[in-house]
Image (cartoon, rainbow, N blue to C red; front, side, top):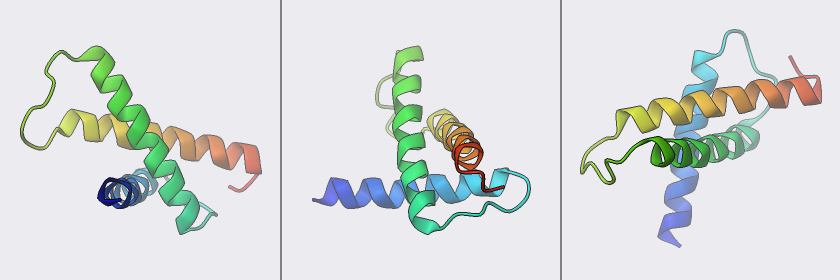
Length: 86
């Protein structure tokens, strides 16, 4: 249960950071932000795991965070394009 809550919190942070790097105002709420953030975080972890041999670094993995934020930003742009909310 703690991992689920941690993933939701991490997804919220990633989603908020992704919205901050995008220009303009995104026309969707906090739940979509969290969902896109969680999806971006999962994609970021998968991509970094596929291209890196480092494993657990024992600290903050900045590259993984950047990849996760970028993935969430791309998902956010895609969501806005599909729903027509600019």
